Image (cartoon, rainbow, N blue to C red; front, side):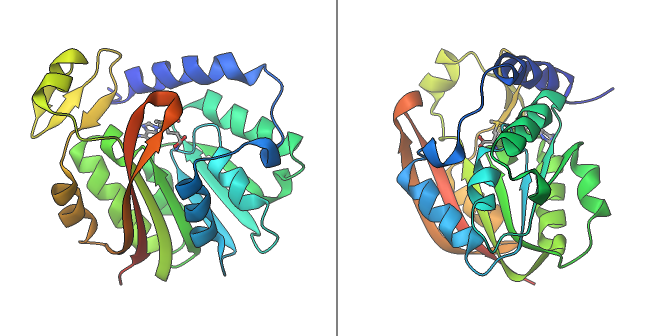
Length: 226
Ligand SMILES: C[S@@+](CC[C@H](N)C(=O)[O-])C[C@H]1O[C@@H](n2cnc3c(N)ncnc32)[C@H](O)[C@@H]1O
């Protein structure tokens, strides 16, 4: 049985409701300042960018507008996410740079070693199982060039009060499941830092605030370690 059937239904529903709306010009989408800076970090001197769990594809589009970027690979387990990304890429006349795939982490094993310059893992590593989180970091480490760049964005760490408030159920080892059936791995920043440093070296870490969700996220900018 697929571990992600609830995840797929949840995100298909979210993205399905957006797919028939008119896409926006990517130049008109203003991202949080630190995300814009992170995109600059990822795209400088890069040609190939990969986004695992790309969702609507907005971050990839932000990368694709840089003239040095030749290829943007977006992977997502939700077919509606891939449809939406594809529609947005076409609307922005950037489809020729895009390779989009509705798949899970097994797709990462089909990509050549050292073929990627920059990777985006935005709100995905803490929404997959513990085993899959490690597999994703392992694959990203292999397919990204030595000293390639990686962006990891994580949900905020939740204290016991918040865990109760959000109605999360503990599965094992700080892996929770939300009411909608989405996984949340609730580790503090030092625990995430130790896991991340098995594969990558930290260039910058910042807690960044998102007005629209009234929430902080944790943003790591990294170099690949080989
Ligand atoms: C929280 S959204 C983040 C979307 C985008 N990265 C962003 O930051 O805006 C999580 C995305 O990851 C996708 N996803 C969840 N589990 C996945 C998995 N095991 N493999 C691939 N994609 C997955 C979901 O379909 C959804 O599009």
